[in-house]
Length: 419
Ligand SMILES: Cc1cc2nc3c(=O)[nH]c(=O)nc-3n(C[C@H](O)[C@H](O)[C@H](O)COP(=O)(O)OP(=O)(O)OC[C@H]3O[C@@H](n4cnc5c(N)ncnc54)[C@H](O)[C@@H]3O)c2cc1C
Image (cartoon, rainbow, N blue to C red; front, side):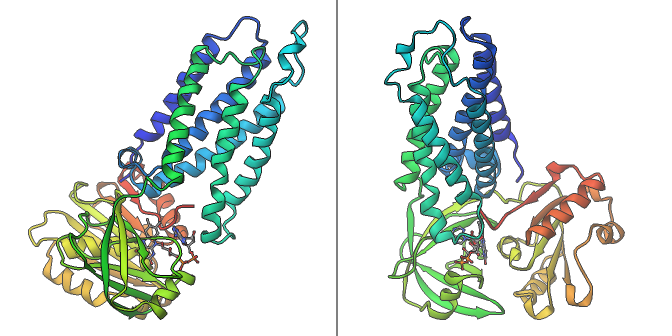
């Protein structure tokens, strides 16, 4: 679900800092010093927000509308921090003001720390934004940003008083942010942010068209989740690298946990080709807030390809007395690729409130807003929209819905990527 509380909280934090910094600026600071340190302080606060978001804390999932959105904001906020830091670096006076005692600048590590953090920031940003770098390499190298954060903190705290008043109200705010940021970073880096692992055992590995269904049997208590949520799956055997996120495609209450994994890269290919029943698996979660249960009475669910998985769980869990009117649009390249289509037809037959609309692009049928406008019984803005699928499809439909006057808060998306 789209939630904006978190974004407003970040904006509020920045605004408070700006008011404190400008309102209590020391009189002997030039306006250039005050302005550029304001930008530096904002950069530090944004970095702090970015680090706090990477803790995966459930509270923030509520504020931002799910972990996928938290990671999107984490990325945007991180890039903004770098931009503010760059302007701060080029704008901040390098020479001491006239009359300042040069002794204050001797043996002060602030400048080299600032320079070093800028170099690492540029390297870290290049790695963070480079989608060509494989995830398994990208993830550990991304942790370089933690080092940048510590360097920036040192840069601020050791800055000469002619530039920064560390114990002014805005300075104290940065100090508090630094403590929160460092604690959050330790929490994430040392894996304390991971939810408790729930042990499972592979019961079956079912090949589907370009995907694999993995069926897990609980080794003890199963996982408690809501339809549409996802979890990190870690194969507990040699050679299976890091955990991967997948939406749970079974319904809550089933005695088995099911994931449907599209074959995309090395890991998902290995699942299909090598994973065997009997192997132990750790599942961490649940995460995500792609929850349609309390949304409006009229809903459009738009699934593109493997983006069906959250809807699969929802429809498997749906009771016949459900009051919502749901149009499930399932877009795939061709009928053969539309996995679980037969099962969906059975559910649509069992549930009088669900209309299933399969669309195959090889037959010239695409999910389009003008088509929805023609075929839906009510105006477009009377529905609540839930979308999961390829980014171009989701972005295109979002743009067209907005152009048709559907408010953004009625459009909910789930992204299948974090970076
Ligand atoms: C919230 C969420 C829910 C998802 N649900 C499903 C689902 O139900 N079914 C499905 O088929 N896919 C789902 N995915 C996508 C799935 O996680 C990736 O396709 C899978 O991890 C690819 O791994 P790979 O090594 O085979 O492919 P690669 O080619 O290495 O990676 C393909 C993409 O997956 C990302 N990725 C790779 N490894 C990881 C990782 N360990 N953690 C996070 N991202 C990674 C990469 O950044 C890249 O964008 C989901 C992703 C997210 C974020």
